[in-house]
Length: 231
Image (cartoon, rainbow, N blue to C red):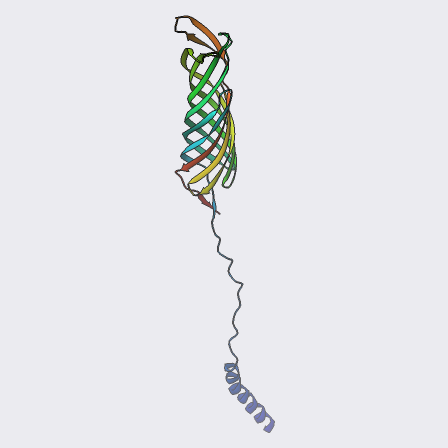
């Protein structure tokens, strides 16, 4: 009986001590993995949209000189491929001279004072850099003169508009959300043509004139749509 009483008292004493012991144990914090860093959108240049710009440079071949003008076009980007269409109009001061094949001892002078291009474009882009090729139709406004090699006097003159073709290639870089700058090379295929001249004496003669030329221009464009943010 005495032993039973001791055991009972011990159990009661442990029951009283246990809550107080548990209260002295601090609550342990629960550690969690840190959240992933927020995903930031990167600005990817999108070449899609309407653009307008100016250009200036040099033309060279049988006729050489400076040129300045403007262009307007539209591009559509699909993945890394870019397709587009563009119209360009330029004032020009291309001039050159050759020995006339019709008027002996005379010089045939050719001058181009304006030209226009309508071209399609296909290109490949790597973010804000675009490499492209283009091709289409070309038209030139021309003046032809025949002058005396001996005296320099003008013997005959005529004006005409000539149709041809153009091919070219270039590189363009977007340096601001809506601005691009580039360099372009074009070759204009203006077919040889027979040009009729009427002299002061009323004599009509024909001279065959070749007028292909190359262009190298610096271009600045403003694009109306901003770059697209992509993840």
